[in-house]
Amino acid sequence: MPSQVAVTNRRRALIEASAIPRFKSEIRRYGRECELGYIESGSFGVEGAAKRHQNRVSDLLDSLYSISVSAGVSLAYQGAKSYRPSIETKQTDEDAVIQQILATFESYAFEQSVLIAETSLKEATSVVAKGLEEGLGPRQIASNLRKVQENLAPYRAEMIARTETGTALNSAQFQAVEDMDLPGEPVKMWNAANDKRTRKTHAAVEAQSMRNGGIPMDERFQVGRARLLHPNERGGRAEEVINCRCVLTFDIKEPV
Image (cartoon, rainbow, N blue to C red):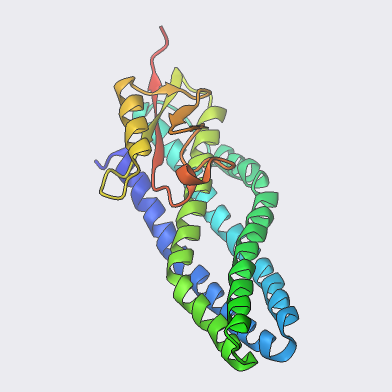
């Protein structure tokens, strides 16, 4: 039987793979709109493109969070039953927990879309400034606006999809386990990807949590200079959260 880590990683990879093309397409669309907007209205056209970009990114994030939260809650319930087959869970309970957690993401999708659009606008503004400094004409600057977004799309799409999937999936698992009425004390473990790209801080926190057999749910992992309740925690330090591929798992300790 696949381990809880393997199942979680597989589910996460499928969600990310589905989201990446959507974000890539959106970033490229933003580039095309910047090109047309600059030709028609200069910098005002670029700002208008950024506003539309933000609205569409918000919708994409809403959809991604819905899928990821549902998966995270499902994984938490499956994990509980794998550790204790006698645990009884009802689909109605699971659905209620999903809706409860999704409610906490309602404003977060908007907040993240604003940050993403601000980054996109800064990139475009930099292209315009450089073009003007070099004495380029409006059409050449417009063309550069599109090309820059096309070049950035693969990396940015993967970064956004990976980070936001991890945030929603790990948060949902954490909250679902906390809400469960379990016949014992749940403890959590940090699981790193453990390859050449794994951050040293993430490998270290995994080793520590595994060595201790997990830590209580309300304790924070010491991850470099950050203290996180789970991988990809919202509001965590960027250097420990962005592009993080770690996942949360848990165990249930028998009552003494």
